[in-house]
Length: 585
Image (tube, rainbow, N blue to C red; front, side):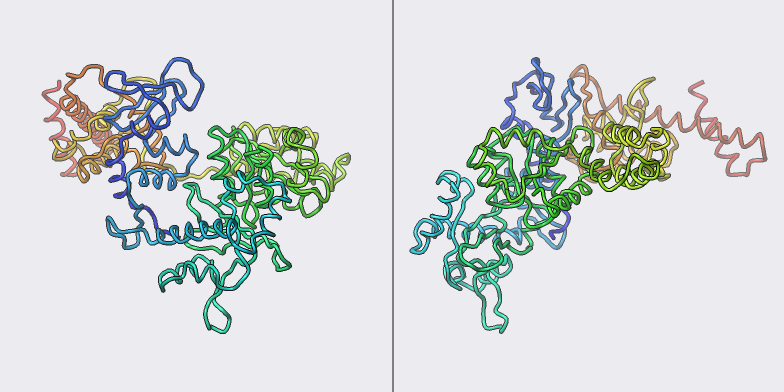
């Protein structure tokens, strides 16, 4: 696996990126004073409340509260994870994503040659489907399955001709290429060590694409009597079966706004459904549905329908998918299960009943809640107290895996109704012990009451980070006990060490931490007047923090003095604090 992306690379990438260009290429922005505005892409509205600040490199919607950086925008708008969003920005900037493992700036990614080689292999297989003398039976097979040339082209379907060294001869022109073919699993070393041979022979080739459309592997469907029927590329540095989904790139290309994804079992199911204009099917790559698959699915669409055979094996596979789905079912996410008639797969069934009826069956798929309770109850006598007690015992650990949400509460209520017991009792037994560990620093207050000077100082530094360079140090210790001081001290230290950061790149340093939410709120602020002296404001707030800390310490020393004699150093400290206080009285 590739190493972690260095924060320095992310900082440099965000400095090179203009968030206005990133968003404007996807949502039409209009200049409005110092900022840009548009109707929010994350909720329906008639009047624009979505603003983008070029100075801060930050966006915010006053309607729904969505806000963040260029990375955050791509994650939300394109349904990407963090690494994918960084990769997309790097691609736009003409950069290779650097990793922590001895990479030097400007160095070529070690995986780039593999992507190029896999793309050449995909082009080779497509060419063989068109031109190879023995491609006729492959073409006949595809026609027999009802595929049009347009759909075959859309999925870049190809043909690996019979023979042991066709691809090796075509692409293995030097030692580096042969090594790449072996690393990606396109060729296999002979058992006697005498050389290598093509992995895919006499097969229909289905290239597997990552989110950016790069070829990362292949699935091959046999045409002759060889086994296995379907053969996948092995794991490699660019291909990880537990994370990738066949057809997801094509789905997102065909449909900008996705409401539903259908998870099927095979390549041909995905392609055949697309032939019937059902363009939201994807397939796992010979593995069970993993948590990584699920996160990727739910980033793309709020509803996932799992399609399985209706036999015992299919229901067992569906149960495994249910167990893996529970931990990611936050509010707004839905999972359902479609069980096919015995002997049918999506490909055969859609040909029998047509698109309209097939989509009707998808719409009538079993909800996860019904599948879960029906599956457990099917093996119990829930008319008896013993059976209902066993139902609760079996359901409780499953429901405990759900995130705290309205959905979980409703599941508990449904279980209580089935088991004829009290909801509050069930809920108590589901509660996980709270972690005593809290965030290592308390964030500044962000709503209600008066404005904290700590909060005001952080807000100004987010708006005008260069002001940190005008200060030698903060006029108080970072260990001060006022809420938010550790965060202010950390922000100040970051800006002293890395001048040139903007609000957007600052926020990325806190991604994944509790403080990120509070910093995001503070970054929305803008001064009411251009002539506002933010340097003077900052100094005033910092001085006020110092005074508050001094008063706090005076109170502590006076309280201690009432209980015991202060030592010499404490007496001297109290004297100095009281002397400094005099001008204020």
